[in-house]
Image 1 (cartoon, helix red, strand yellow):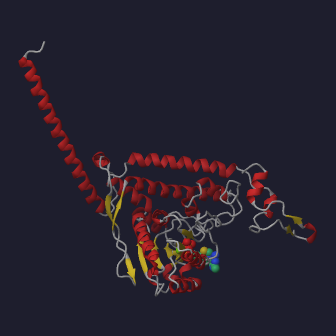
Image 2 (image 1 turned 90 degrees about the horizontal axis):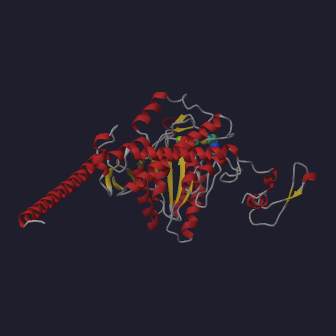
Image 3 (image 1 turned 30 degrees about the vertical axis):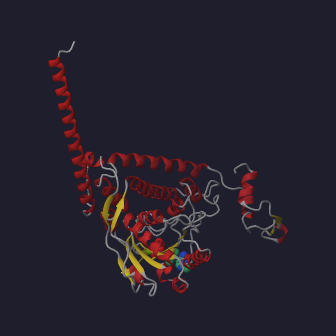
Length: 435
Ligand SMILES: Cc1ncc(C[n+]2csc(CCOP(=O)(O)OP(=O)(O)O)c2C)c(N)n1
Ligand SMILES: [Mg+2]
């Protein structure tokens, strides 16, 4: 039985325990607040090569958005531009990291497949430029459209195709994005107009897509990408003229990766300030190695276009690690040291990784797990891309016309004329039990 003294003593102990708990709680709250403060402070500091094992535990407890400062933007014919103060939450940080890593790994695998002669023809890789596509994609809203040149694998994946569909397209297999009929430069999704091999060809097409958006009163933009080499193509200026004349919602995005094939921008362009090259079309220079700067610039630009103010030029400073295409080793017109230096100081993935770890938005371990997941996705895709079948020869006669009755298709001689066996690949795939 409890004596009254013992009972009182127990109550006093319980009260003390509760006070101790409250104190502990206060301490934890204070620690979290400090961590948040340190977080913001650290996130604003320039990117440093960090190994953050010691304070990762402390920062991991912080949830919510973290502020970052991007490099400044340069403006042409604009009174104001995107903000350099941006915020990021954990889910987005993980998402962007995963997307950039997937593109990097998918492209490395494509490079290997090419060297093994499992991909034939052309193959232009996007390694080094991932922050451009991922940043722009993250600012897109439903109904926005994209058209680009031949460095299109990453965009195809971002806009709805699987890694398997991209790699299998490269190896010409049935599981490919267009069942192996297109190859490297010709991949599409409902909001993605490819994949264009003729330098500059996509720029007027992008203006045309934007015209359709405006005509339908859609609050959307057409992101029209081109390289620094294509920035000197006459059709860009013709397209820009019409786009401005009609205030079309088109973002002309110049991905300046420093070279057009083996020619450095200084040797090909009288002005390398691509954001000013639209003359009467306002422009913005953006750090294309920073996914957050790209995201914010695109978000701002979309708002500008959709307010009916017409087109914009976005000049994204980036870099390509590989040669122009797989047939170019990429080292005769620049030094290996230059490439190494960019990898070390400006890489879009390691730079972002350091930032989000420092800010407590992800841990080293979480990102390692993600890397593993990405490796599995790409490895599984590789299996399909190297073992799947190719379309049967009759597929040569499919997809010729859209929405017409079956045609007679002439062969090499008139005697070889045959009726089109299937109208499109879908019909053929069904017939062979693949759809
Ligand atoms: C009309 C036309 N001219 C020339 C070529 C050959 N060509 C293919 S890519 C390229 C360089 C383009 O460089 P850039 O626009 O900077 O794009 P990047 O390859 O750097 O992404 C050239 C000249 C072509 N495909 N089409
Ligand atoms: Mg270029």
